[in-house]
Picture 1 (cartoon, rainbow, N blue to C red):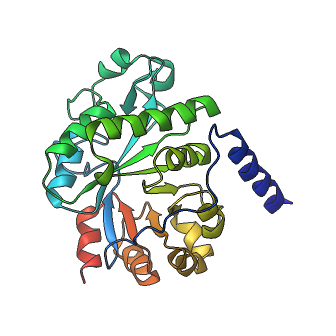
Picture 2 (picture 1 turned 90 degrees about the vertical axis):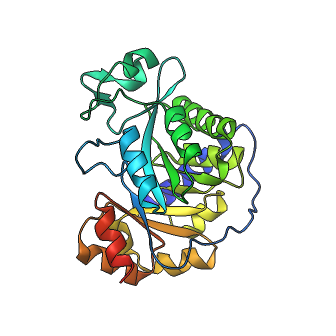
Length: 266
């Protein structure tokens, strides 16, 4: 029954898209050889930095790792603010204006950034590091789709399509990104959809909690056979770094990027 209900959800999401997806998608190349590292909310766990801050992104760029992850929320006036939680200092981002959000001060003294601020930083970087944009799941389908559309539009405006990837717990947002940009790398976060099901929807990757991949290690080979990639989140210990490196996952998202780089380079 649970499997059937999930398939029904997937079918319904396909039906609500404004433009139907093709059943076929171009095969994407897999990640670079070996397990690569993504800094969770940027490289924030050091002095002078803060989660989802400009500084945390710059520090990740300086490391020249595969990626630096950020989280975005859609404001009432259509801006995309960067923060992990739905609320910060008593302000609920999806119920606030961009001006109200920009007035908020992060723990390192910066004001809360917008996605466009992070894209400007990314554009100045000469490193290979990509920006991994998590489109946060809002209350409504309309908000999720609008967040996806505005994110793709902002990335295109900045000319950063080749240095940005997308992730979301909202399957609708993932599908919409894939519809708007068939060449985009898009990964689903929830953990209950198999690689084969995601591949049919135009999704290029799985970005799952470690428990999902521990339960379904067979998804690693299944995904790779389909030309898809896998990320595991959020792991910080040498034990887990080695476990998932040896499992063959393509990416590790971590609050400890230095430790992950060290282990992955062993």
